[in-house]
Amino acid sequence: MLSSSQEQKIWNALNGFNIEIPSWGFANTGTRFGKFVQLTAATTIDEKLSDAGEVHKYTGCCPSVAVHVLWDFAKGKQSVAEVNEAAARHGVRVGAINPNVFQDQIYKHGSLGNPDPEIRAAALGHLLDSVEIAKQTGSRDISLWFGDGSNFPGTANIRHRKQWFIEGLKETHAHMTPNQRLLVEYKPFEPTFYHTDIADWGMALLMARASGPQARVLVDTGHHYQAQNIEQIVAWLLSENMLAGFHFNDRRYADDDLTLGSIDPYQVFRIFNEIALFEFETGKRADLAYMIDQSHNLKNKVEEMIQTATTAQELMAKASLVDHESLLEHQRKCNLIDAEECLKSAFAEDVRPAIEQWRKSKGLDINPMRAFRESGYLTRTAAERGERHRNAVSSYA
Ligand code: PSV
Ligand code: MN
Image 1 (cartoon, helix red, strand yellow):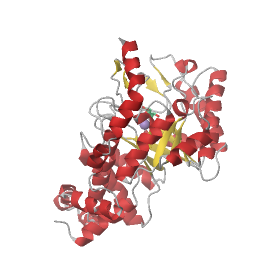
Image 2 (cartoon, protein in one colour):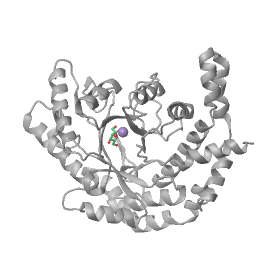
Image 3 (tube, rainbow, N blue to C red):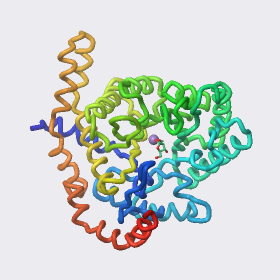
Image 4 (cartoon, rainbow, N blue to C red):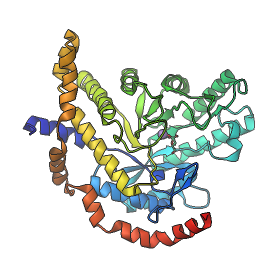
């Protein structure tokens, strides 16, 4: 049974916690071996925003949606004003703007790191278009991930590419308004497998620093080697005031995009704990964008996002229960067992009843998944969208 002061801590944590969902999490996706099509999957940006609106309606903690420029603002399809209007109609708003300089044929050997100046200029053009879109959507964050790298030793000039990246990022930074942020994401491998231009947090940090004062590092939890201590990276970036936020997902092997907390919930808890400890010690709120980067093709996409958002709330609530006063004292005295138990006992608490009470206070159903299932939304969308997908399935056969 939680004490009333513990319940209060959980409520405070939940009141200050929103997590952004990705538009690409609602479309039919697959692996490089094929797609398993879902009849309820979204195709248009309007459908994606409608699905996102459902997640927010039942969880109350997902008011914004990250969008991918190429997938959601394809030329001639929908204007930015129409996307803004659709988001508002579905009860959400557009969040981080994600340029796409990894899919087009011209990017076979990279984008900002490409040896061909014309291709670098095309990539820069797309980044600048994305900054303009962000101005029109009122988005603070332009979130950059590059697939750039090489597959074979000796084939790319690593130092030249680093310099070209710095030039492109500086130019992009120069076009932002003073309240916007440039987020630099790193990833050790995939799609390239010998070298990746921005492969780890140190490289992302150098790139962000070289870009300008409004650039920060984005940590995607799936973008690390197996044994890496992600919470240490988080603590270091926080202490440098260089952490922008997260792309949350879980992983077993590489960038698996499994559901947050499905493999190692204690790791997510430890990340949240580092943030809570930073806030406790500094008395400042960490200005972070919490985002989900998952795209599922086996679980239902809307249900999976609800499951992820509620799991994030639970782990964040547990982290809010760590007794930081005692933890700091134990750390100072090197009381190893007692310090560790501070974390373990908070992690072991059942926070779900307190979260249910918080939901009640917000006029939400205490069980978002059940409420969503009872709403009949999936039956409706299967009827509306199913035919299109059934045709797609037969065309694969
Ligand atoms: C790349 O693996 C990545 O994490 C980037 O954030 C992309 O924008 C996203 O996934 C696309 O799914
Ligand atoms: Mn990501």
